[in-house]
Image (cartoon, rainbow, N blue to C red; front, side):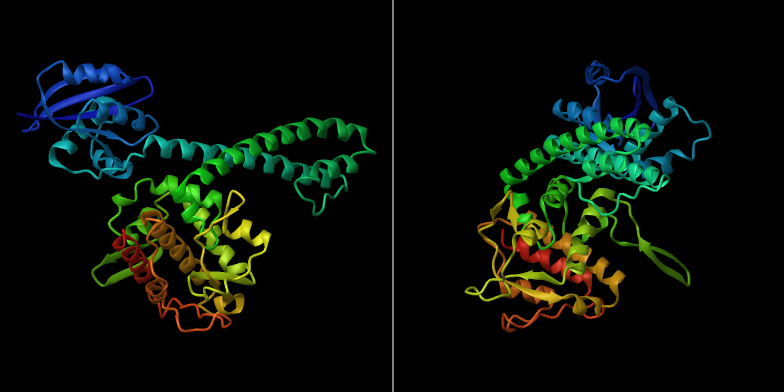
Length: 417
């Protein structure tokens, strides 16, 4: 007989519930939250386990990996669906939650969640740790700016390198303030030094990762954006098309339809917030630079677009200081043309989706078989016959639907693997 298992995981203990095909509870027990203890309960009897369900959480990746390695059919369930299904219970307890999860596994009322690989989890930890140190250092700098302003000491516009010297210059005539500021400057210096250590580790990973180097050929994408996208997508094959990538990142609009009412809201923001921030930053580079690269392979082979060193670092044409040899010619579009594409807000949203589509295409494509420039131009609605000296025209939200562009780019990329 088939059996189904529900695991309600907490920090110290895990409630285990086993039910049969008819929904009858076979066994309920509470064990320590350790893979060995849980495996002992699931393997001590001759049970034909069909599915094992546990809710996505801080410990779910660790337990999922151990159970999957033991050959058990474990499934990680999406938290919102889990909450909606278990909210019908009158009494909330770990035992009832485990029983509810087991029943969800039995009737198939669940949505599985992709569990990131170990390498992706390590990349994610590096990114979040770097972001944490950067945020704390900025908090100290902003606090110093604000508190010194109360005494008429204005820091003004100063870079990261000269910030400490500027603060010491302002408090030189105030010994009492200098005694207070000194510990903050020491803490800031240590944070900046360790931030540099993590950033160098990030650059080394990107330099050795072929997929990240390919992603950095996308305009507006640098090492941080490329590694964030690499860690978020993890396995490109789990997406059927690039439209699914946008939905997974929360870039698709909400919809409320009932009868004659049909409202389209803002983006759902259901996915990874860090990845959305990185994509918005990449799109903002395209929107705010006076001259911005918009498509690869549009220029003449003998006349590639010139890049200065600062824009190379910003727009991601280099990886770890070494120029990407497979970057082709480029055409550029002025800021005035981009602003004419339905407004700044709409254009930014459009470019965010385009950035996601281009990155997904490069992530899923083999570097030995790049997509032809003509097909790529056709997917973007750009004119291939335009001379390199002329500016290409950016398709607006009205003439070139973002979802259509996403679908075409993904088809080009996957179709040539």
